Amino acid sequence: MTITEITNLANEMTDEVVSTSVVKGYINAVIARINVTLGATLTSMTDDNVTTTTYQDISDSWQRLLFVSYASYAIKANDGSLNEADRFRSEFESSFRLLEENRFNAIPDGKRGTNFGNMYYMKSDNGLNVGWFQTRNKGEDGF
Image 1 (cartoon, one colour):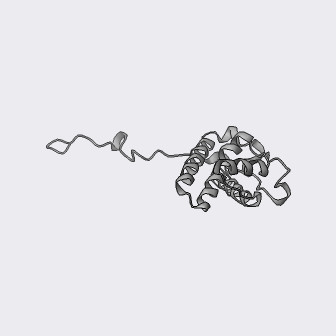
Image 2 (cartoon, rainbow, N blue to C red; image 1 turned 45 degrees about the horizontal axis):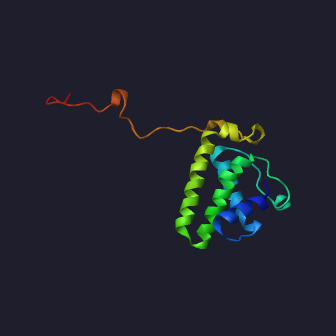
Image 3 (cartoon, rainbow, N blue to C red; image 1 turned 30 degrees about the vertical axis):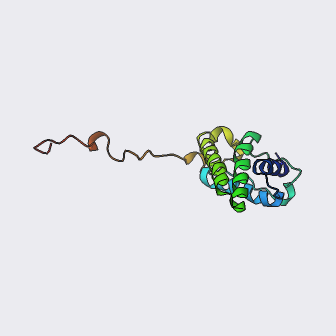
C-alpha cells in the first residue's frame, strides 16, 4: 500500500481530512514500535516513497490492520474525539498482539534483526504458587 492509500482509508474511517505527511509520521511511529518490540528492521517511510511507492516490508493485510487503525486512532486523538480514538486504539493493540504472535509469518526473513527470535513471555499470574512452592492447606500443626 502507498501512504496515500493508507491516508485515504484512515480519513474515510474517521470522517476527517488529514494530509499524507501527517499520516506518514503516525505510520513511522508504528514501524518504530514494531522494530523495537520485535527486533525487526523495517524501513521507515521517507519523503521518497510517500505517495507513489508501495511499502513492501510487510504485507498489505498487516498494513491495513496496523497502519490504518493506528492512523485512525491518532487522528481521532488529536481531534479530541476520545471515545472514537479509544475504539481505534483497542483495534490497533489487538492487531499488534496478533502480530507479536505471528511475527515469524508476518515479518520477512530479510527484515528480522539479530534479536528477532529472542522474544519470550513469562506467565506470571501464578507467581511461585506452583509445584513445591504451592500454597498448601495448612492444618492445626501448620503442615
